Structures are given as C-alpha cells and as structure tokens.
Image 1 (tube, rainbow, N blue to C red):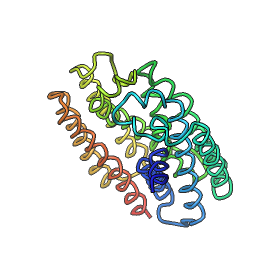
Image 2 (cartoon, one colour):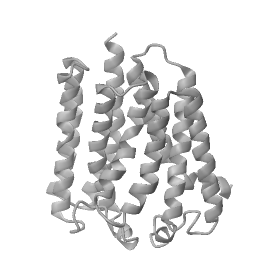
Image 3 (tube, helix red, strand yellow):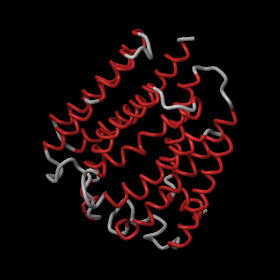
Image 4 (spheres, rainbow, N blue to C red):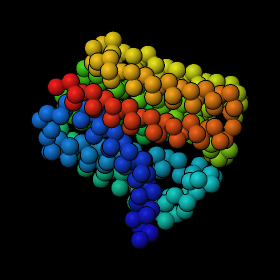
Length: 288
C-alpha cells in the first residue's frame, strides 16, 4: 500500500532500523552476556524507533521545499503532496510521545534523556544548519553517535568510560561516512543549497583529504579501549586491523577522489561499524 510506503519513507525506515540495531549492540556490550532484560530491550527498541522516526518526520517538514528540488528526495511524501504538513506534524508528535512513554516505562531516566536530546539536536539544530554551515555535519554527528551509547546506558544507567568511548568512536566515524555520501550526492545536495562538504571547494582533492584525515582520528579512540583496560590485547589487535583497513579505504579515496572510490568508502564504513561493535560484544562476553 502507498500509505505504508510513504510512512516508511517519512521515517526513513531502513536508517531507523540501523539506529535501533546499533543501540541494541550497545546494550549487549554493556551486559557482557549477563542479566539481559527483555523489557529493557523492548523499551530501547521501540523508544529508539519512535524517537528516530519523529526526528526524521520533523526533518522532512522543515526541508519539504528543499526536498522538492532534489532528485533523491522529490518523491518524499511532503514534496509529492501525498501527505500534508499537518498530517506529518501529528505523526511526529505521536511518535515523540510513544518514544517518551517507551523509554519511561522500560528504561532508566538517563536513557530517556539521551534519547530525547538526540531527537531534538537532529531536528532543531542539525536540520536547519545544513543550509548554513559545513559545521552541521559535526552537529549531526552527535545524534548519529548516540545510539550505541544509549543502548549501553539502558543497561548500566550511567555514562562510564566505555559509554563515552562508544560515543566518540561513532562520532568520529560519522565524518568519513557522511562525507563520502555528500560526495556521491554533491550535485543533488547543491540543488537544495546544502553545505555539507568540509570546504566549499566541492568534489575536490582537499575535501577528499579532509575525509581521509577524519578517518585517522578513529585510531586513538580504538587504542584507548586497550589503554583504559576495557579490552585485552587479543581483541584490540583485530579492531586495530579493521580500523587501519578502513583508514586505507579513506586514503585510496584521497589519492583517487572520484565517484567509484567515494562509493567504496561509503560501503566500507557501513561494514566497518557493526563489525567493530560485534567484536566489542565478543570481547566483553569473553572477559567473563
């Protein structure tokens, strides 16, 4: 049915599922395989799904006129006029309420706070900044980096060293990931007036260089997992290996900045992050 397809498009269903999945991985990292509570996972899943869906709906309300200018977004429910602004606003409010209730009933207060903050930053800071400054990417990286930390906090109820490192690793990862996407869709984003590359030089060597530099920033945070005694040497080695492989992909993009290499880097980033989080889960569970 078209209504279901439009609703899935409105909340960016596939992206939403990835957000929920990474938060669940964060929960399992924290649990170390012990005392996993199904009710907490339910709250985390539904709370994350609804608040992320609300953020995407608000994003599309704010950007509806600009979405109409871009090929990749002009068929969204609002620019295509298959949904009205009022209708989408009602959906956004209901999903915000559903997310709030879900986090409140099944999870702790810190999980609720981080979930709501993530939604607000994405909707009301990142979204309007996208047409003003390339710094929008850094602002958007905050809610983009919170899901695994939120999942971790859903289990522990506190922001400890591991929760902060989970946030920082995914925060830094956002830059090569998103800038490779911005490169691929640069012409389309330009139609909407979006400023998303590191500099205003467009698809240039300097922007590919910044993308490579951002990938290098992952290395110290990965190493900190070991230096802070969070994982042992046997698990840090494969994590360093896959991180260097990802950095190598970014370096190749810098040396040959074209669409093929940008797509290659984007796909590598999509593989890298869940693989890293799964290694972290295995390292935590193996430490028992």
